[in-house]
Amino acid sequence: MPNMQNSFERLLLASRWILLPLYMALLATVLALYVTVGREVIHLFAVLPEAKDTEMVLLVLSILDLVLVANLVVMVALSSYESSISPIEAEGDKPDWLGKLDSSGIKLKVALSVVMISAIHLLRAYMTEAPPRQLLALGVVHLIFIASALGLRQAAKH
Image (cartoon, rainbow, N blue to C red; front, side):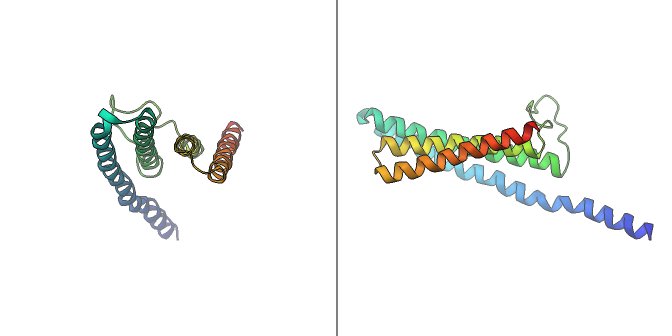
């Protein structure tokens, strides 16, 4: 019976490698974000000579939003790989935070990123003079994201 248990435990432990294609898919989405950011940058320079300040800020916010999403994807993929599959041994090229994040730390970083992305969307809606009902709805959702992030932060302290 112990041999069967050991075999099952080895199989269970090896099954974590099934997650690898999912992390690779996450990283592939960063390539799609590159294309989208590239289009935004081309558009930015195309309208630069006659763009109003508001339009410039909106384009920059759009690019910032996409970069934050890309950072979030890479952070989740790296930290999830390291915590679920295998430690990353790349000395010198390894971010300081890698290896120090547990699942609650990852959740908190994701929540804070979502708050930042939500703030950008809210600012973009405000700058494009969205209807008051839409601004109110976006503001309420943003406050919910803030409350969630604060709740996760508080839970992580305990």
